Length: 194
Image (cartoon, rainbow, N blue to C red):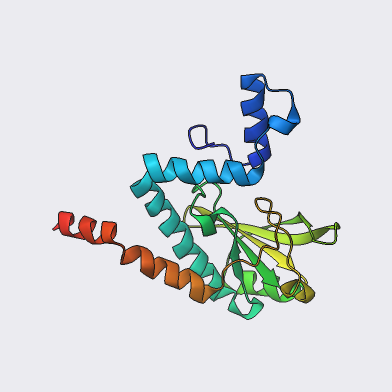
């Protein structure tokens, strides 16, 4: 996934098992195993580069979260775990029963967007479509998935863990950014730059 820039776990899994000739689906890795391997890969072979990518994504996420603060945004997906690429960008869950206020905010801020739909699974086994708005901030794609207010208590399931994806609020994202800046490696980099 890292080397070829593949964004979707299922596509990467199918490509890998096809290349290896593994036809028994019980031997295929699940999403959590792929995610763990990806985290190991970045930690071992690209720690500084991935930290910079993750910081850029989280900074852009925080800016978007502040713009859409009234909709209680939550950062979800691989930007939380630190394995997202710039191409994958940022995904935020917003909560509103009516999308019009979000559209008005996009218009007020002069943000060109594309509307779409995003399918999500829930703990009760249902799949639901939710409206989404995609735009680019700087060079980073942002996706706003608009969930109904009731989804605060019962968020959709994560594709990685199959658990409710509660995500991070703006304060938690800000804390992560501060921790990254205060990490020992970052302090060493600042000393080397002098």
